Image (cartoon, rainbow, N blue to C red; front, top):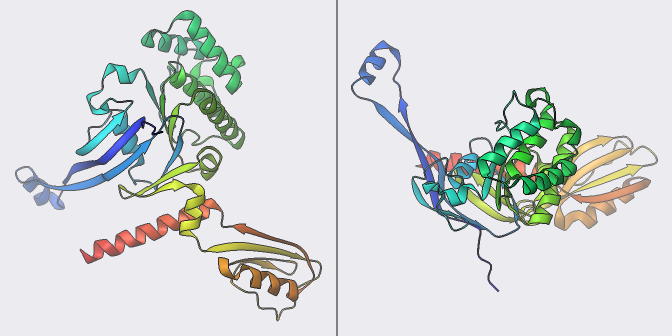
Length: 337
């Protein structure tokens, strides 16, 4: 049975035209009459779809085009070309029916009123969306319990900690029960415990309400714990769309082996693979997948092993290498043009 996508993006592009100022007074004067412009492609023919209940990670380095895509899907930016559909609506036309069914939460932007208590800020959102009083109370009670902020409802927004304020921003974003949620760095700047609480909340809320969620984050723990699927974008181009497991399988050909020894390794011992860490009683190496058995045998023969483990390259390191490789390919391509 086919599933109708909630979000559909086809060949979506966004270019920005900027004025290129020439140096010196003469250049500034010349620019008054003959201006030179440069065109930057923030998003270049992006295509993907997202179905009901999916929680998708949208990853890329700074300036890759992630936020630009979210803003086009939210109707805040008009695409240069291509098409996008959210819940069957064209977001660039900003239909009121769509505005009531999605939410955009940006970790570095504030949507609440700083000089009002949190509850009054939420009351204003209730009035804006025309939410029934009984329904409003029910939703607020569910959300403040999930986020554990009941005792903060009477506190001025500006007096809340960063973590508490982000939780209130989440409540405000979800108050009208959107079917689509765009999250742009929702845990940026939060302490470890606040990040954990926000992740737990997002996971449970998504499971309860099957809200389509598109998440950008520089914290790989956010992605690992929340997203089964990831979309990788760089220089405005999408070059991978699949599971985190597929990222590891496609972009890495090595594994990590760690060994602990009861006695010091002899100085003459030459370990296989690439040594990542080494001290007299421990060693950590990276070897090709096909060479794992031989590498383990070499370590066992090299000294008295008390613990031996084989693991995948950490996902954050895989992603770092992927984007490093992609940027190098883009640089080489740029140099040949």
